[in-house]
Length: 251
Ligand SMILES: Nc1ncnc2c1ncn2[C@@H]1O[C@H](COP(=O)(O)OP(=O)(O)O)[C@@H](O)[C@H]1O
Ligand SMILES: [Mg+2]
Figure 1 (cartoon, rainbow, N blue to C red):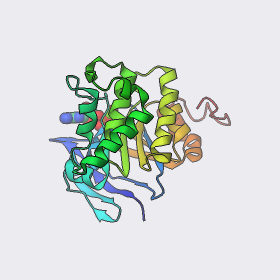
Figure 2 (figure 1 turned 90 degrees about the vertical axis):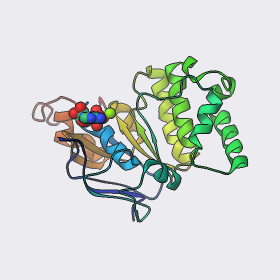
Figure 3 (figure 1 turned 135 degrees about the vertical axis):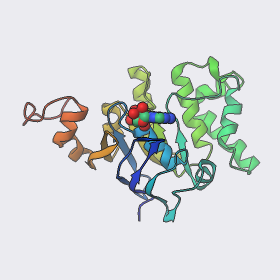
Figure 4 (figure 1 turned 180 degrees about the vertical axis):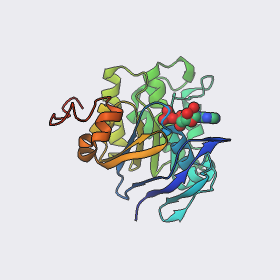
């Protein structure tokens, strides 16, 4: 049984259809799975439908064996399905500590929440230094760390990360790579990672899906995905026949 299973999901906004017949799975063993695809492919909309922010029009979302398709975001967060939205979305006028506390809004275990804040400040040391600072005064990279730490404060069993590398310097992207692996190793959560940065996504994930025009057009292990012609044609912008026989070393 998968930890998360998306089956035949359609999504859309009003008259606009976005995702069509999307199926994917994240395994029980704190797997890291990525969804790659060009801008406008429907990746964010799919993550939002898994998180309960957009209602699927068709299909099912099953989490840990339970049908959660129509649950709201706060109910899903309480079960452990937590999204870190793209663009960091920290509360700029609130302090770093208040942002972290907001991540635990669905929890009532006060002592454990304080212990988790200490855990986050210990792991993301910049957040300890900036505890009282307004989140809006942090750098882009620091805000991304705060957004991830805020997600972890909900004690997720799966963290849905929407383009965390957007706008980060190469140095910060490599730091982010370690953080994503630690979400599994230290914080014991699975990760569903949406990325435009194929290098980052393919280096941390075990399984991947390629989305184009709302549909999954390729999937498999990372090696299978790298070798698929549709990946090379659509995502990497290369024509399969031109690239025939070439190793995707640039990934
Ligand atoms: N709130 C919305 N209302 C209407 N259309 C939207 C909305 N959000 C996204 N879309 C459209 O849905 C499509 C997929 O967008 P999105 O899921 O953000 O893709 P991605 O994350 O892959 O860039 C795009 O054509 C976008 O314009
Ligand atoms: Mg997006």
